[in-house]
Image (cartoon, rainbow, N blue to C red; front, side, top):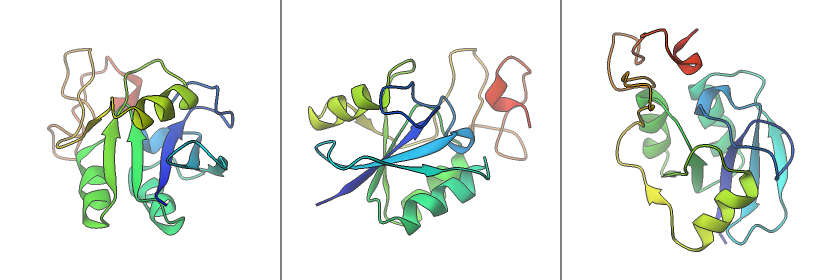
Length: 138
């Protein structure tokens, strides 16, 4: 059975998903049907280390709302699939959408609604710094 990771804003399946992969407070892991949820702290708050936590815990997929190019590349190289959930939903809702096949698998880093190419679409360090999104601040 596959193990799925969900990037979370708090250690509660009913909490909202984190809007940025690397800055998630914790990572919820679960079976594909939502069974046996567990929470892993993401003390590093950077995408590369978050990807490592997911890989080390045997996850074969991750559900995100926003993610940068570096993290996408690392996850894809590790054979971990990435699905994108809509912003503003809980971890429980994300898993339900996943089970229904309603999430799209990610082919490229996500962009945010602020019009900037945040989170991996441009700039020298993998982030566009337009100052309009908290995910773009370092």
